[in-house]
Amino acid sequence: MSDKATLEYNGKKYEFPVTEGTENELAIDIKTLRSATGGIITLDPGYKNTGSCESAITFLDGEKGILRYRGYSIEELAEKADFLEVAYLLIFGELPNKEQLSKFHNDIREESHVDEEMKKILDGFPKSAHPMGVLSSLTSALVAFNPSSVDVSSESEMYKSTVRILAKFPVLVAWAMRKKKGLPLDYGDDTLGYVENIHKMMFKRPNKEYSKNKIVIDALDKLLILHADHEQNCSTSTVRIVGSSFAGLFASISAGISALWGPLHGGANQAVLEMLEAIEADGGDTKKYMAKAKDKSDPFRLMGFGHRVYKNFDPRARIIKKSADEVLGDLGIEDPILEIAKGLEKEALEDPYFVDRKLYPNVDFYSGIIYRALGIPTEMFTVMFALGRLPGWIAQWREMRLKGEPIGRPRQVYIGENHRPFVAVDLR
Image (cartoon, rainbow, N blue to C red):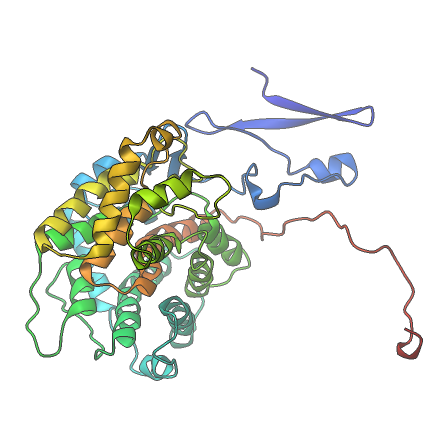
């Protein structure tokens, strides 16, 4: 196989190197295309066929249903590791030993305090504010309380900034939810594990003693692991391109939160619940809506089934389905919305139309069910996605800065008016 690709245009040939990744992915390196051809660029709306970087963090094969973090399969990590171990792996490249993990957790505990003045910013939001807008704003506001820029050549400074955001972000997530539910703000408990503490900060009632549920904590832990990174998706590439201007970690992550907010990205699990609520309001007939989903002339879309990247099955869905079944079984919740979800799942897994097209329930379908069962407001679903994705954003920002990647600056093909003279206002 040739290590060169040839482009022929207007009677001239141009050669470009072909680079190969460790999983045999091939890419034509076109960084000299414009200069070599005298101005030709590629046009790729949505960058579906364009690699923006070389990365050693996450490998994804949508056709085969493979997802790996730093070479470890998502199945094995979800079964054997906890979220903080996975966060360390993504950010620093290797699984931590006992001493490293203990230090990591202790350092996070030490940085978990959020300045009291941040509460004034939170108070400025109405209770009706969407939690994603609140979270993005509070994350950006952290810059004001940590104004010094990070020296990327200093490993200690990079480590400290990582620990700070991992420590403070869960507090902001919990505050966003407690604001929504009208509960007093909580700082959590340093004696608990990372995910247990998140759960307590979110759900502790002022008039009740907190009690943890192992099945619930395990399900949350798995959900966060499954969402921790997903290659160069919309929010991750946003974090990298914002960071490429030398914007700081907090500002870059705030931008990533805003990108995640969109319903085509992180809002998918919220869309699942809104669909289920609409089906319930219309009588709860799942067969009717499965028929609507198969009717190409019907505008109804079945949310939470299939995936734009995974063309076979979503490996994360197989893992979290078990947790969803365990949570629903343990909590014994009687909820018509969740009954509709189970009905749709059963029919989709048995209906040849969906089976043949590999339109299986995806991770957004099951995560929405779990969050609903735990009593997390629908508007908070994307916030929980952001909480899980935080280590991936940090890892991608860190990798991009340490490699000294150039500032992101996409090109365009201009299709507007040609040069024309200015006309005075009284002559227009």
